[in-house]
Length: 320
Length: 312
Ligand SMILES: [Zn+2]
Image (cartoon, rainbow over all chains, first blue to last red; front, side, top):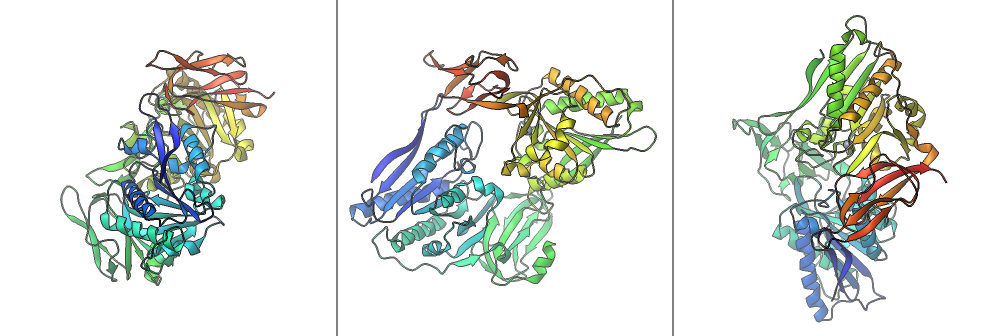
């Protein structure tokens, strides 16, 4: 294992920012290679935990001589934010994952993104451990955006249940996944957990899926169990349930629950009077993939995302 | 006086509604022919627009007989943010000016955006007043996307500002208030002036004169057009960006809005700890220093100034 600084940046007063990398199989120049990027945001604690867990695991596998590819793990990109409970770059509040491909002569975070991206270029595979961009929590899923250079096939080797495969949003052109794909790395994101917290079961599942990927893609020489068959889900297969009222939100189900049409999934109560304002009922059968994870809820917040095999027509009607 | 109304309310979780208030002025008699919306506080840490709204309201209360159109004043769009020094929409931490056109069936910031668009839909003009951010101080300027140049530059020239900056379209800017409004036929100008969290009285009066002049030209006010300054046009020159070469404390040596020579020292980056001057910030071109850093702590790359100069 080689531990090294990928980016260092002096600060006016605090200790320099260091983005550290852990490289395994440095000598395997011929084999396939992967870079795994952890917490880009200061509340991506689960992502940090999975990435550092991988470093420890790979260190042991390297001692056992099992590393046959080249594997770079970067557990924390935004250590400055992590160390002070901020989400974004602490001075100007910019989101590092909105700065790619970066600009070497630009603003501070553009420079950080640019230097990081220089290191990330040229890897065969790119795995981005992502948190959610809203107040939700979710089952681990693959987020693969269509840039024209994406590779759907390889994501199936993770053995995760769902691959969310969709066109890219304009703002995503400034994100790492899109730019990495443009540079011909087979890049995808694994989105999981709840921001600011560690979920051990979910972390385990993500860890196992990455180990499976490394084995199947011939970077790690160990036998692995088969994972799940990945369901490719486009946005049309996801039903969004929204809160019609604001208040205190109480959920009655866990992510991953297989729910029936008519099942009560949660409720919203008046935060002052305690009166029940809304009962959230599923209009279809499916799997709860995401749910709102903050106890206070706003009107029209997405409360549940339900993945279904079949489109339910009455939901389509409700959307309009 | 203006008709004050709560024009948008959205339920919050604990016994409160999010609200946007508007003050509307209409002609004392006769029908209104045109409508203008004066908007501030899309960013909760920008307060110069609040002062302009005050000045305009004060003027209109004193001259109700001059009013020929509908004049809507919205001093605080992100009202949660304005009252709490929060730039973004609180709780979601989302920049409201990257959420347009928004949607009724989406999260709070998108609902606010949608509400704002619907309130101003049908306005002939909108003036969206920003005051940079807490880091940079700006001379009064209007920023216009290249695609809107023909329609908006003549209008901006009426506003008594110092600089009209026509910039290339950037994809992310398609989600701004101004872009959305311009798309639906409201001629919308984005004014940037001053600095976040502070109030500069002189700029407020300068823009008031500009607003009165624009409204006089468009027949919304029955007054003589004012004598206003003609802004510098960005098309005739180039903008140079001054980024900090190292971290430290930025100490300006030149006043904002000065004409400077190529090679002159704009400021120093110094070390508070060692007492050394770490770096001299040198003007790469001659011109006017239209942006200067107001918040002194810098990292490598932090913008410390912008100069507009003639094309070489
Ligand atoms: Zn602003």
